[in-house]
Structure formats: structure tokens, C-alpha cells
Image (cartoon, one colour):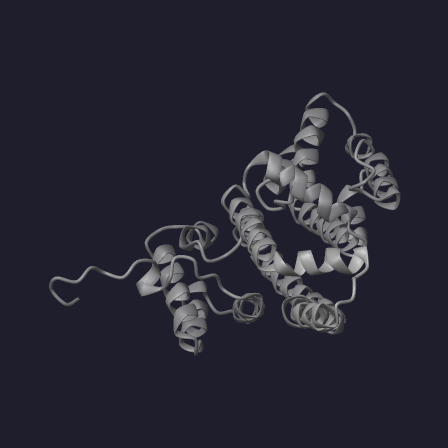
Length: 313
């Protein structure tokens, strides 16, 4: 390090706000799973993963994780410390390490990010044309209000004609359009900034989750994803002998969407009182489908709960 200069912030000079992209996460988890499944030990597998990475930022992140594990941390702790992955990532890896099924956890993450990338591409493709049309429409409206309407007013004023009331209102709006546009822009930017700053506030999380759950397409996708994670992760936990209450409590740190975290808290309270899991899940019909609740009830009655989670996951 050059004297008089401070060391760059973050991991090996990486911006602290930098996050590993979903496509790269899929590749990392998939390759690490393949290397470990081939019989290589963790140290050699991770070294191969680092040496094969071409992106310098991702390589630095992986190196930091590896150094942390060598220093005595568990893999999930190292992933959490680097702060470049999501709570889902280190939460699922923790489940895999504590249950001795790290390979299944890595496969779960790889599949998750593959599907997430495909869904994002599908949504982007579907919204591209409407967004282009909307953008063009906004530009046309702004051009008309700023350029065309004032020209229109000048033409009529020269002719000495009296404009209709509606046209006069549009002209007044045109004259004040820059002011109103600036005010509207400031409001939008301020709202987004405040939302980002206070995004972890319970009130903001509740309001945001309610909006998302009511959206026609996004609400369905979020619910299906959370249900799938719920089933797959509980299968890993319960089939490995982890008590159901402990498994649900672990999910609270993995599935971070507020309605499900709230439901996990109440489900845990119900289980402690001796209630059935299916009974507690029925209290949240907007989150858990009837088919899932029925399968869980059958699994509890037949003592085959893990297999039911596997079927529905």
C-alpha cells in the first residue's frame, strides 16, 4: 500500500454496495456443488472455483470467503460476513451444513437463481413493448405541452379568436408545466429515497408486501416462490431430524418476505401450544394454498411430513 493513502473500502477495494449478480450466483453454487459431489474436498473445490473465475470482483469475494473458512468460520458464516449475498443464500447454506446436506442446499440455490433469471427475462420481454409505448407517449405529451400548445396559442391570439374554456385550461397548464413537472419529479425522487432509507421499517414492509401481494402477476409469482422455498427447505430440515419448531424458526431468517415471516412467528407459537402445523397454516389462506395445507395435514396424520414437503416442493 502506498504511504499516505488509505486502504480502499470493502472487500479488497470492492465497492461496499456491490452485490454478486444472480447469473453469477447460479454459476457459483452450481459449480461448487459439482466439484464437491465429484469427491474433492472443500479446500481444493473452492480453490478451483476461485482460479476459474474471470471477474476480478467476484474472484475477490470468493477469496474473502475462502480465507474466512480457512480461519475457522463455517461456510454460511463466511458468506454472511462478506455481505455480497442475500439472507436466502447464507440461510440455505446454513441449513445444508447443519443437516449434513450441503450438496442439496447448493443445488437448491443454483436452481432458484436459474428460475429467477428466466422469470426476470420473461417479465422484461413482456414489459419491453408497453414501456417503449409509454415512454414515447410521455415524451409526446411533454413536447406538446412545452412546444405545440404555446405555438397554438400564438396563432389564435394573432387571429383574434376566442378559445374554448377547455383549450384555455390546457394553455394555462402548459405555461405552468415546467413548475408542476419539477414538483412532481421532486416528489417522486423524494418518495423513492425515503422508501429506500426506511425499507426495513415494519410499517414500510407491511405496506410494500400488501401492494405486491395484490398485483396480478407479481403477487402470484411471489407466493409460489415462497411456498416452494417453504416446502423444499422444511423437507431438508425435517428429513434430517431437525425438530419442526426449530426448522420453522430457521426459515424466518431465510424467507424474508414480511407476510411469511409474520406467519412463521405465529406458526411457531401454535406449535409450542401443541397445535398442528396444518391448523396454523389455515390461518393464513392468502399465503398457503389449500392443496398444500391438505398435504401437510395428511403428512402429520400419517407421520410422513417430509415426503409431503418433497412432493409439494
